[in-house]
Image (tube, rainbow, N blue to C red):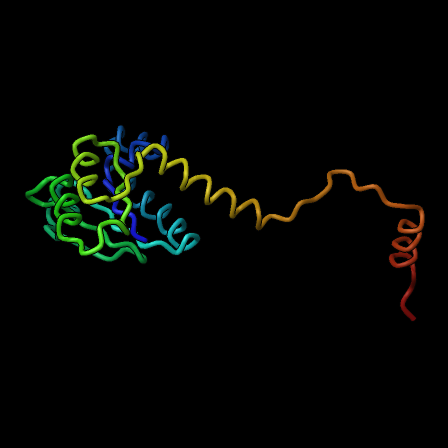
Length: 165
């Protein structure tokens, strides 16, 4: 399955990325979003294609690049909405794609192709939850005040007080 993501629509659903955007730090916000999606893609083994409006930078008019395992597209002279619709229109199996956007026009268009959709805010929560679940499962649980029996205490005391001969 593939996620086709409306990049700037999603970026504003992560509060720390929205803050970067409001500080006019577009490049850093995009990089951090791609870092999050890289982890998410690795954990879920899903293909990710993301579309951003405009171009990568004002002096680099590239239309696409591979960042980690993520296919990144820049709309250049078109809108990201147009490219997302074109990807779905030309897709031989649009039902295997989930479009991530909160744009009602895109949702309405891709639904004609039986393409699944997910609101950007729901996807942001899903990404955060997936990463959090993995992280917490990797962190061993420790008791704050473990209760040791008298036998266990004596064992450890012998172990640490015995002298090597």
